[in-house]
Amino acid sequence: MALALATAMALAAATPAWGAGALPLRAGDGALVADGNTRLVVTCEQCPDTKLITATLQIENNSGTDCITVQAIAAALSFDERVAPYAWGGGAGQIQNPIFGYGKSVADGAEFGKYCRALPYLGENGYGDQIYFDTFGSQYIRRDGGGGAIGAKIGKPAGDTNPDLVIAPGQTAGIAEFYFMPVNGEDSLDIGMIGHCHERDPAELIWATPMIAYGATYLAASPEGMRPEYACAISPGSFKVHVRRPLPVGADNAGRAVAGYDAGTMEWSYEEGGPYENGAPAVKHEAHSIYVRGKEDAGYSGGDAIFGDYKKYVHSEARVDFAENAAPADYGAVDAALAAAGALDRQLYTKASLAAVDAATAAVEHGLGIAQQAAVDGFAAAIDAAIGSLAEREPITSIQIDSPALTPVVRGQTYAFSVTLNQGADDDDIAWTVSSQEHAKVNANKTVTILNKTGTAALTATDPISGLSASITLKIP
Image (cartoon, rainbow, N blue to C red; front, side, top):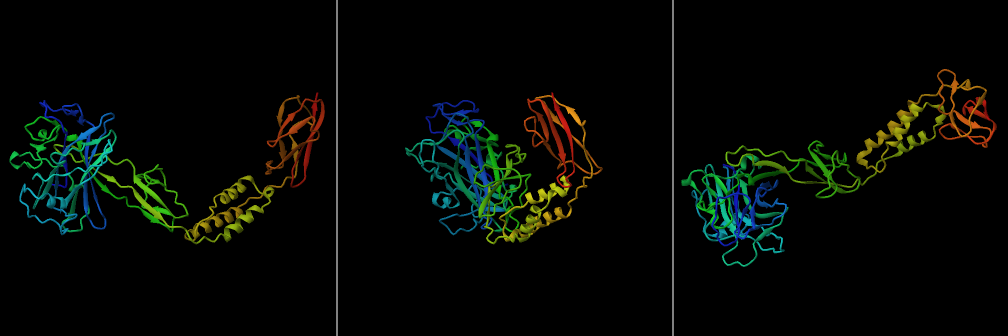
């Protein structure tokens, strides 16, 4: 057997004549009790320090339009031999020994309440009344060598005039928590401890929770409907079990990274609850927190004969706290390297080798702390290496414009002229000028535009390093 919960919901209404059960299930007044999108989820989570296991029952109203109205919930959990109910308060807090016989009723509601508690829920109408365990003998605990079970009907006492629990569309209501402890005080919670309870043999039926009967799980529209002789809807697919486990991440303050982070399965945010981003977290230099969560959790598994695939692991959002980088890194070597790069006579070197220097200087990240000194030293080394690898330009010893000495041009047109240099030289820094700004202009892209005036103008190409130049005459008819 395994730690599990199965539940049924009951709506407060006059008892109608019930027909064959089907979803959506409604009360006599038409109010929704459950439909095919209703989910009763038990989320199990373990405290890493105390090893306490908390199993929380929640009702998810996934209807797009209707509220769910609840008066009572019948709950039954089964647990395997590795865990036992644990008194969370009002008692000695010891692991419950197997002193209860099979199907043992616990008449004392206060005694039973040591092992669980109902959760207050603020419904759609603003009521914060707490649904709680009644004291009419329906609660029970049993535990034997193969595990055990714990269950009760959760609801309002007779005569309570407070409104029923109303769950609006898209909302989730926490109903109750059950507490367990590993028998050896050490075991970690795993999905093998989890499973919904169903009993096929009528002789072994746990009547304290009559919604579990003959292997079928019921959602009931009235308190009477929780008995097998009343018709109600059978919906094994409504019941799910989630086992929550923390993400294995932590703060690497020295490396300014989230240790254990896997970009393939995780996403991160600066804010609790998102919005979340993909890729590696961008850790800042000041003190701050990064929130990490798992991406889409895997599908359900289990292969149960009644419930099918109904259980899976889910991940908690993890908060990773980073301390401030208090001591700054030493940027002396970086400053020297940047000064050397800025003092270069860029006309002496090839365009490609200068690009490597520019890339190294652009990669410098300022404001790092002493913990990132190695990274800071790497910035300086990269700049120095790029400067050391600079390739000098081939000196220009001859230059000629690739156009006739007297070149006819047309007013209003643009022209791109080229030059022929000695072998190995490049024309990246050749400067183009015209003798008359009234006849033509040259832009930064070395494109010549002929203006609307007749006459002639000299076009000159000059190497700024050697001073060599060549000219042609532009004839503008």
